[in-house]
Image (cartoon, rainbow, N blue to C red; front, side, top):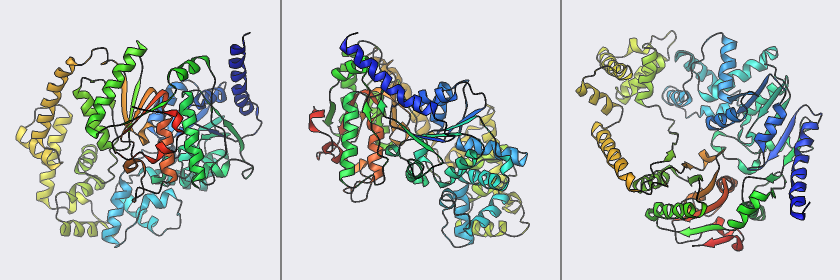
Length: 554
């Protein structure tokens, strides 16, 4: 055996030792710290193999879709919310109606009826069980047809399991992915499941992205190491996804963050490049990160040029991921690329507006024409503030009537007419165009703009044929940093790579743990090569944290 082959064999053996240590451990509960691309999915397959009644949990639909495919036939894969909703349905022997924006609705009710600003999501996420606001929430939730929001559906099942331990389901194995992004409430649910079933937690405190929902990396840190005897601690140190320079750059960022007294309490774990013949060749071909400074309007042109160069070099299929720190910039880049012939870009970003809109109310009323929640949402858009406040006060009385019985008959008639139009559109029936325009305007859509956008798209789609036909089939995904979790591609473009967007503090100077984690997640999506594109003259702080020898400026 040659020295080279011997090197690769030793690398495989060394990596397998970490997997074997987890599989052979007699510990009932285990926690695995695994950096980006270190083989969590492979571990899950090995852990679940040979078991018939298993459950895998995470909290993002995109991750569920990927894991469902990878773990097909091995495990039931659910989001935490889906699991909670299903179990609550069993507990109540009925359908659990979900309206994600319910905490915002009841929060507005509290402001009007109690004169208080109450963040109900924060209360539930942090298990503030004794907060007096919870009773108000329960009362309003019951009035609103017993709908649940995302946070209180988990709260409800946690409280149910805590009072009736015999109702906690039992599994041969529970696997929990991305544990660093769980909040106190979600951790409570996992701890309850662990009372009946063996649990494997997997995550990485360097990839904590969800502080906005009160998630904390402290939860994974508190369960790792000697401080938590209930869980045996393990790690997966070898990254087989990324080229060598990307792993080295990630370690540069982590080292500098620690020097700057960031990532306090971080789990000390190795993150190493996995030596593999194929990866070594890719690493040799892509020895550096590429940095470019372009005007914002030039970014689509720069990406187009680089993709063309890659196509010339590779002479085969490859994947591209475009990551932007903001939805606004991402949209502009996607539109710019589509105008250059790239009609093959997969771009979907979830609308993170938590405020209920008129269409939310219409949707609810189309399934239940007497829904208090539906009529409450709709009434806000048909009443002035004074009348709306008075309506809410009536709904807060004991044995309050249905909103559709309280609301002015003229308004109810107007809403009913609009619902008829919506129902016709849903059922693909002929609709009075004038009335349809009225509905569209009411829900905030300009019929003229819709038509203009359609016409523009049609014109653009025909002009796209002028682009390089060889590039039109390249799979390109475009997303924000938060939505990039779980994604990977051979070539990754990180755009608008400036302190203005990557440093979230108001002064744009003080870097936070969240900023570090955001950049690490974006950086480690790439298998072969990273392009960092700045739109400002000043060099980004994170670029200065990376060894200059690893950077090619073009």
